[in-house]
Image (cartoon, rainbow, N blue to C red; front, side, top):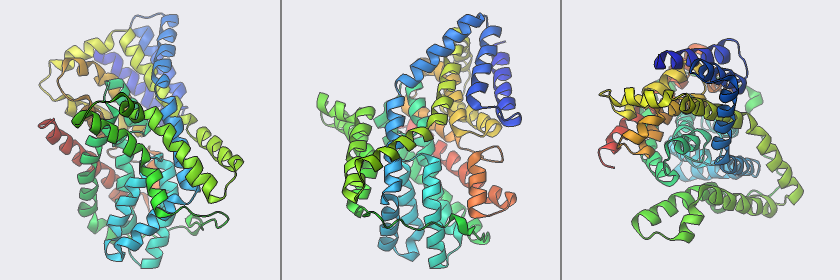
Length: 433
């Protein structure tokens, strides 16, 4: 009965989101009400659980995600992303252009939401490919692999941050392990798909080629990369110092994700805003626009939080935990499989990761598996096999002007290889940590 309710709930979610195209947040609420009522709750109790789940989930994430959106907007509009890309290309040269763009995707992808990073960096990739006469996918696909890794594996991105909260994982350690798992995944995608990247020869649409705005001063490379990486330095650095050197309350405070993001945004306001010639009014307008851009993401996360709470209130999660705990299968593998199945059905990596985390959550308490590795396994599963129900699939198809078949042969293979290699590295890390 317990799995029947979950299967019905997930199938209904897939139907509402993928077939009817109903708003994801509304779909989550309807599914939560169905699972709650059929699971023994009254309509009022179900709604109370939904409200509690939304509140508990967003209370710890709004600051991080809000500040993350602000930082990403300033990195993009100031020209810092352009500066990082162009400097690395000059440094590495045409021969190592892929490595330069992999590093760019990783650096820019950390503070920036995936879609924003994609829209900002792909026109630069198109310009570089045009200038160097290299195949477009050869230049661009490894960079997109970097963006996918930051999106699926690394805080402060929405899904990894929210999944960390569900599992009770340490964000600093999740970030460190995520970087360790992400690098082999990116490099595997680069070498595995080298033939495809040269064989497919797309001609990008001219309207996606952007020109730099010369009205403001572009921040220097040192400033651009320092601000882009500041959240990583503060969160990851504090975690390393507290773990391996000495635990200090001041270091812990600076490494708190919300405080680290606040410090980073304040630094960006000055160094990427005021210092580049923008007025405070200009910067404030950009910050306001960034907040509006994440409203949909926040609602999706809120819906997943409601789903988690419904499972707790109906005691479905406890029963699932007991059933999964009795299976002779690694929780890491279970998390990946469930997230991958939901990803294939629904399309959204965020929905897949958070829904899978809600289902796997009871296993955390009864397992000795690192919650940080469980975050990464869930995140890896959530980005596998992107196809026609994923917005990223169409974003890639339209920007690179390729056919659906060519998108499946390049984009989908890239996402899947990153996912599988990421899982393999996580399983290896589990033998050590």
